[in-house]
Image (cartoon, rainbow, N blue to C red):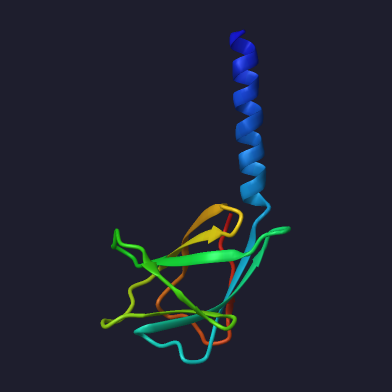
Length: 118
């Protein structure tokens, strides 16, 4: 009985891990981004799913800041300069949560596409 339970645990964890790895994300910094604002086009590829929420956590902070979607661009503005490297948390419409740490730094380039390391 104990080995069946362990086997089920292994199968469930493998499925969760495989599902998380199936997500492909690319973030392209858009015109209008500066030291106090990030505007990102986010390419989120997961079959039959799309993004519903995106949040940013700056370096040294515990707080997650929500990004606002305007057309196909996600934006966040702050009163003080942003502090990288930046961490992102995504929630999909199907309930998948992903956190990507240190995706890119404060010296980002407009037009450059950044991909989280998995």
